[in-house]
Each structure stands twice: as C-alpha cells, then as structure tokens.
Length: 319
Image 1 (cartoon, rainbow, N blue to C red):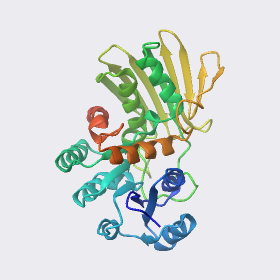
Image 2: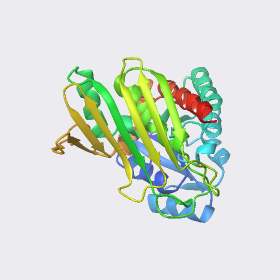
Image 3: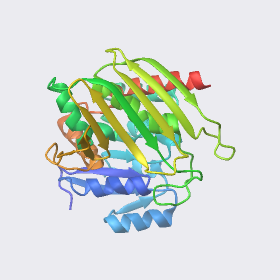
C-alpha cells in the first residue's frame, strides 16, 4: 500500500522501451506505478498484470484525470511527444518524455513555455547524459583532466522495414535526424559545455516506402572550437548501436553503450560511477529526485532545447 510520501507514476507507451522504464522504476524506493497506457488494451493489460499495476487504459486523458498520478513518463511515438507532454503539464502532472521532445522546434518551445508557467518538472530522456560511460568522461571534463577536441559518433541500425526493438511492427516511423541525431547533438553540447555554432548535414536517398532518409552525415562545431562528426544509417548490416569516440587532449575514450574503453581498447571500470549501470534507471532516479527536491533535473526541457534548435537548423538545410 502506498504511503503519503510515495511518488505515483503513470507510464504511457507499454512497448519495448516503456518496459525498460518499468524495470528501472521497480528499483527506486518510494515509487509506485499506478497506471499504464497503451495502444492495444489487451497487450496493455498484460503489461499491467506483469508489473502489478492496478490501472490499464488506452486513453492518456483517463489517466491524467486520476488523483493517484503525480507524474507521467511518456514512451509513446515521437509524433505524440510534445502534445502529450503539454497535456500532462496542463493536468498538473510532472512529466518525463522519451527522446525526442518534439519533431519540430515550435512544439518544443511550447512545452518549455508551459513548463515555466507551471513550475512542474519536465525532463527529456536524453539517456546518454546518464550512462556511466559518458558520466565518467563528463567527470573528467569537469575536473579539467580532459577536454574534447573531436567526438566521432556512429549510430547504426539495420531497419529497412518498420520494426521495433522486439521485432514487432511499429505503429510509427522512426527518424534519423529528430530522434537518433538528438542523442549526439545534445551529448556534444553537454560534454563540451558549449553551444553548437556551425552545423552541416547531408542525407542519402529517401526510402520509397518509409518516406525518410536512411543515411545521414552531420558535422558540428561548438563555440569552444571542438568538433563532432556523426554518421547515421538504417542500412547498416553489421554491429548495431551507437559508438562514441571521444578524442581529447589527454586521452581517447570509446563508449559502446555502458562500456568504456581507452584508445588502446583497454576496458575502463565504470561500475562505481553511479548507483547503477543502467542508464534508464539512472534517468528515472533523476526524474524522481528532481520532483522530491523541487529542483530542475539534468536533461530538463530547458537544458535540452538548444539541441532541438540545432536539429531545426539542420532540417532547414536538408529541406
């Protein structure tokens, strides 16, 4: 039974990624998931039963009207993120929206404006800020033991049909620029502590069925002079995922998800960097802590909006 200090969270989007959040939330003291929202009621009820969640629905509005919901985590299709984040804030609920915050800049600005008016916690799932591998590098930068000269990033998938991480058909189309590039553009500005002042992009042919570019190349330069080279592909039939190479003044680091290596491919122990090795759990811990401590979270809408300003510039260039 929940006590009065329990933070009651609803999860919208009971798919592959939503369940990663449910796994993370189970590990955080004083948190109870009270409602889950999904597209198909039967599947949503299955997830609710699996995680012991008392309420399942297909309607976000139904959940927002409940008095046993303090905060919402949105793991819904990209196209719904901004409008649903606005709905949560209007209903007086704190919100964490999975990356990306929006797929156009005006929507992102609208979320920030409403967050400022309400004073509620609104954060975005920029998980790379929380992964221990990237936190390790961040701490080195803060201690002035390392400065980035170049970030070289590859984001590679093999996704010529519209499938999710569980190999099931998706109800929406993923996007290299607004979704996958958002991780790296934000991380580059976060790690350099400097805004992007130059940004260039080129993209490959548009896929006839999916209507999106399957390959993209992006160059960035930060105000402090650091550069970033980002290659993205849905066509890559090889090692999948995102691989980050930090080339700096004192070292080279290679981050592969939660693992970190030096330039000689020797593994660096990052197990003591934070209380967990799971970036999603750490992101959810920050969301919960910010609500309890009445403070701005790391990866707040305000902090990540500059990333979406860069994506907007790149989209106009590609347009």
